[in-house]
Image (tube, rainbow, N blue to C red):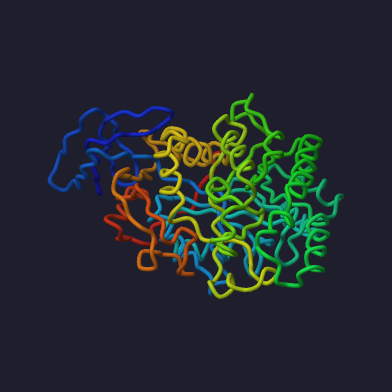
Length: 446
């Protein structure tokens, strides 16, 4: 029997911070108490004095690029980066090659992850204009949910047929997660800028091309359709002030039919950063103004936005260094999202309790993930120890992403993940992944 005893921890869980010990036996949290003594010499003791223990972070939106796009990333490389960043579970998106729009492709992905993932995993099943029959074959108890691109799709994943959309919304009990940007608005804006600049459009115009109007048109339509059909809707990466008005904080999360997510980059960067970061911070939806950022923070803290995630989406640096129209959108974040949000905690923007609520508890509640996301006796032992006062600087030597770069290069963070425990196994310690391929398939209470 594997046993780990964490001593003298500041435990952050369910809105409280309290000092205590945590006993882990095999893969389960066995006991949480003020003081626990080791009952044998085989117990691994971790003294967490002065440090905080939080539940493993659950990232509800990542792109690990496998299969088919493995020059950018793989499930193996990015899941290692994730556990180094305190993310113990992730939900990966369907826009790979082949796309995860058939049961066969879904099962192929699960097989890859079962053999290579260092973090716990599930996948979104992708919707298209013509795969409703495949969607209806998906067992909601076995996958995280359904992903629909209502703008900015890859391959044939743009779902732009209103009749198909309504059929999908009406036909499935799965959580429908959506990327909301109105494609017609974007294309019209892009054409105007291409007429003036050709392909080399200055990156500062990205948030004008993928505008707040484009986001709001799409988000409001999706929400209207969800209300009409009774579908369970989750709006990914809200990026504008105006969209925050579409969501409510008057209903407990467990009772909400319409929920929202914000991503770290929309809380950290603004359009003022395009001058120094260029296409490295080109995301879809775009990083927008500081006023949008301020509104997103407000909505996150007051409960209109439920989840904080990464939308980790790596590309090679050569790809990112192309001119505007050829530079892909997306960037790597799983290794640095937690320490970045802890940096905002140092600045007084968010409490530790709220960090845990938005990054650990709420994804587990929202997706009905079984026995994860909380520090509770009987739950799986996914735990992260963080030191809030151990500064380090992001550089090429300590980046674990396969793409080898980060928008945070040169940034010094005051906080550090010192240990990650996954399913009761110590997998990351002292800046090194010490046990890999320990991830398990997430299960759902549905």
